[in-house]
Amino acid sequence: MSIDILFITPNSSKKVYQDLAKDYSAIEPPTWSLLLAQSCRSKNHKVAILDSNAERLDDTASFNRIKKLNPKILCFVVYGQNVNAGTTNMVGAIQLAKYIKQNNFKSPIIFIGSHIQALPLKTLNDEPCIDIVCTNEGVYALHNILNLKSFEENELENVKGIGFKKNGKSILTSPEKVVPQERMDHDLPGYAWDLLPFKNKPFDLYRAPMWHAEYLEENRTPYAAIQTSLGCQFGCSFCMINIINRDNNDEIGVASNYSKMRFWSTEFILGEFKKLFDYGVKTIRIVDEMFLLNPKYYIPLCEKLKEYNNNDDLKMWAYSRIDTIRRKNILELVRSAGIKWLCLGIESGNKSIRLEVSKGKFEDVDVEQVVNQVHNADIDIMANYIYGLPGDTRQTINETFELSKKLNTLGWNTYAAMALPGSALYKDALNKNYELPKKYEDFSFHAYNTKPLPTEKLKPWEILKLRDDNFIKYHSNNDFLEKIHKKFGQKAKENIVSMTKIKLKRKIIEEAEKNSTNF
Image (cartoon, rainbow, N blue to C red; front, side):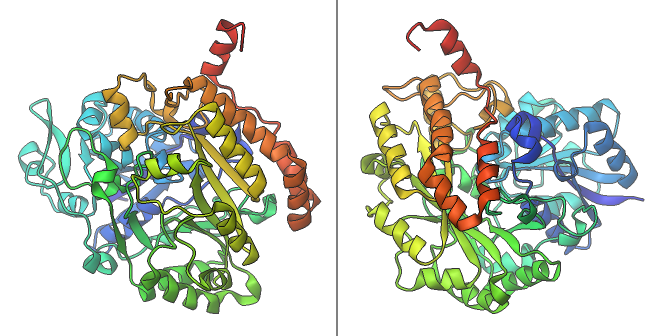
C-alpha cells in the first residue's frame, strides 16, 4: 500500500496536561488535518490521517502505522485544542519526527501549525528532523509540493510559502496567499470525516470537555469540532489565532498583523453539519474564534440548524466576545439552533485592562448585564479570564475573581498570561528580555514547567498561584456547586469535587516556596 500524503496529529497529552490527561482533558478531532486532507483529496491525491493523540499511540506504534501506509510525504499538522495551544503540541510532534528519522524512513517530513507559522526559520534551525515548513495554513503550498517531480532543492525553491534547507542554510521562499473568501468552498471543500479512527463507532475516540458534557462522563462522546469561518478581525495582544493568515516572511510573525476573517457559504457548511448528524454526532464544538460576529453568516446558519434540533437534542457550543452578542433576539435564535453554551472572552474584571489588550477595539459593556441576558436565554456560559495581563496587580486580579464569583457561570476557565509564539506579547517579551519557557511543553498553561509573563507588580509564580488557587476556590464554592446540582444533578456535582482533587504541580511555585520565608 502507498499513499501520497499522510496527515499526522501527534500525541503530546501527558506532557501538556499532566494528570488531567487521563480522564479530564478533551480529545478533539484534528480540524486542520481534516481540512487539508479533504483539500488534497479533491485534487485526486491519495491521503490518510494518523491521529496518534486520539488513539493514544506511542512512537513505535505510530511508526508501524506509517510504514504500513508508506506515504510519499509525511505532514505533521501541529495545532492544539485551540490554535493558541499549537506550540505545546510541538513536543509530541518533534519526538515522533526524530523517531522516524532515526529509523531511516526516507519520505520528507513537512510541518504545518501555529508555532511554525510564527517562527519558521527558528523552527527549521532548531529541528533537523524537519525537512519543510509551511509559513501559513499551507493549502496551496501542499498542492504544489504534491505536484513536484522530486523534493530536491531546485524543485522546492519554486514553491511559494515554504521553508527548507538549501546548501545547509534555512531559507524561506516567497510568501503564498491564503485561500481567499471566494474560493473557500472550492479549495477547502470540507472535512475528511471518514478518515478518522474509531473503536466501535465513528467519533467514539473523541471526548468533549467535561463542562460541555454537563460534567457527566457519559455525555462526552461521540464528539466533533467544526469551523464555519477562519481567523478573526480583532488583534488582541495575548492571542495568536490569526497567524494562519500570515502573508510575509518576517523572522517573527505577529498574529495581530494578519487580522482577517473568511467564511464558508451557509449551504456548504450546513452540509458538513448534516454529515456529522448522520454519523450520530450531536455534541459539537463550533471552533470559530468569533462565531457570533457577522450576522450575514451566523443568522442563516442558525435558522437552518434549528430545523435539525429535534427534541432539543443538539448540544453545541460556540465562542463570542461579550461586546458582540447584544443584537435583539439573537440569543433566542442561537439557543433554538442547539447552541447551549457560549464561551465568552471576558478576560478581566478591570475595564482599562480589557480595553488595553484589545487595542481599543473592545466596546465597553456591562458584563453582568450581558451574562444575565445569555442566562435568560437558557444558554450556559464558559467564562474565560486571563490573569497577568499588562497592568494587572493583585488587586485587579482579585477584582476579576470576585466578578467571576458574582457572575457564577457554570463554566470557569482562567489562564495565566503567556507569551505564546505568534502573539504580540511574545515579541514584546523578547524586546524586554523576559525569561521565556525553554521547551515546547512549557508553553502549556497546565505544564509543570510553565512560566507565565510577569507584570510590573507581580512575579510569574505569584500570578500562577493566584490562578491555581482560584481554580480550586471557584469550583469548591457552594453557590457554584448548588447551581450545578440544580441544573445537572448530583453526579455532575460529585464529578467537579473529584476534579478539584487533582492538583497541578508547578516548578516555579515550588521554588518560591523553598526560597521565600514570606511565601
